[in-house]
Length: 77
Figure 1 (cartoon, one colour):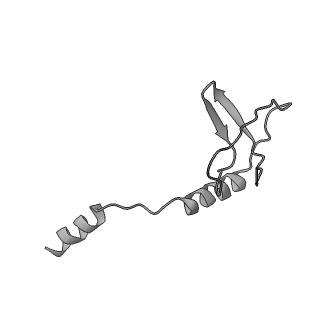
Figure 2 (cartoon, rainbow, N blue to C red):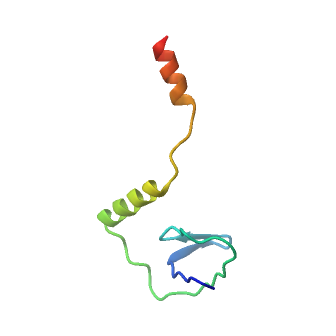
């Protein structure tokens, strides 16, 4: 394997894992290894949560919709 990432998260139920960080830049086959960690995950500060949300929003693709074009055309009439 060329790259390795260590991400932390929590097992929500047998089929869902909630990651603390987004996985970007990896495609193709991966191997997932789960192991328990001792104690609860440290709580994030409000500033850290806002920073993470902004980074996630910046990485998201821009919304593509014709509704904006429809509104503009309606206003021009």
